[in-house]
Structure formats: structure tokens, C-alpha cells
Image (tube, rainbow, N blue to C red; front, side):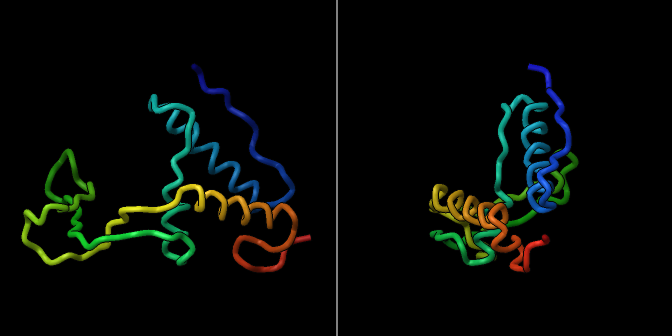
Length: 126
């Protein structure tokens, strides 16, 4: 179906406006590439992992980035079967709780909406 462009968000809260516009970008991007009107939120999950806010299980693996291939340049690859014989340089997430990740996200957004605090921990703008 054709994209229906909407207006920029105008909630009156700058953080929520940026969030809404960013999510719309993701929805429209995936729609344009025939992946459905969806938004993958890997950045949210990665930020929660980095901040120690997401419970995960990991295992050591080797990760590298393809730099020599014209077609695959920049592709991240990992050796889960130890074929390369190299020492692990990363942790691969093997389990997580998506419901918990989204619940934490909803709480943070709810706190902004309620005016309790900003996402960066500062005082809300009034």
C-alpha cells in the first residue's frame, strides 16, 4: 500500500516529538523496502544492555567486519563454530526478555509524559 505521510509530531514535549518522528521514520523505511509497516528497535535493546537494564545471557564469540568485499563491505560476521580458530572478542546475546525490554521502555516514556523526569535523568521542561 502507498505510504501516507503524516505531520511531524507536536506533543509539546520535545523528547516525545523526537521519539515519535524517529519511530515513524523506521516504520516508513521498512514499509518502503517491503518488510511491512514495522519498526525494529535494536538500538533500544542495545542501549538497555549497555546500561545494564536488560537481563541477558551471552556466550563468547569472534566478531569481525568484512572490509574487502565490494558487495559485503561493512557486514558484521561472527564465527559461532570456531572455524577461524581466533580468540573470542565479543559476547553474543543468546537469550533476553523482549517483554521486559518493552516494559522498561514504556515506563521511561510514561515518566516523560507524566513530567516526572526526562529520559536523560534531568528535570522536565515546563
